[in-house]
Image 1 (tube, rainbow, N blue to C red):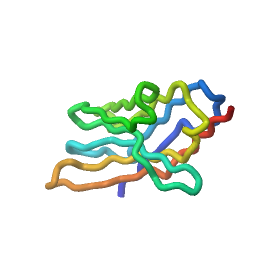
Image 2: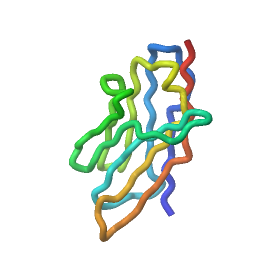
Image 3: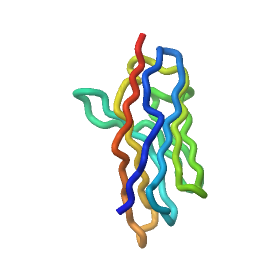
Image 4: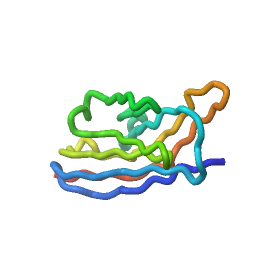
Amino acid sequence: QVELLESGDGSVQAGGSLRLSCAPSRPIYGDNVMAWYRQAPGKQRDFVASSSSGTVTNYAESVKGRFTVLRENGKNSAYLQMNSLKVEDTAQYYCNIKSTDRWRPYDYWGQGTRVTVFP
């Protein structure tokens, strides 16, 4: 079983920046989508950003222009650079790596990493 190891959690003042990282415990093969989701207390888990093996990226409207999703295919690692953070970005952030190859399916989740933005 592959575990996704997340790091980069922390507390920052509004307007600041944080960078989250996600790396698998073992190599992952095949085309996939690396994505980030977040869940604020009492709310559902929401999509934040994703990057495909072909480097197509997608972002939630609320983070466009502030967050950048990056991937390092050689290390199967994903990153989320978060700039101009707002109080409403406070949430538990989850990394997800999901296969797009139907002959090699997998769907891995990280344990979550806490981001707190204070005024």
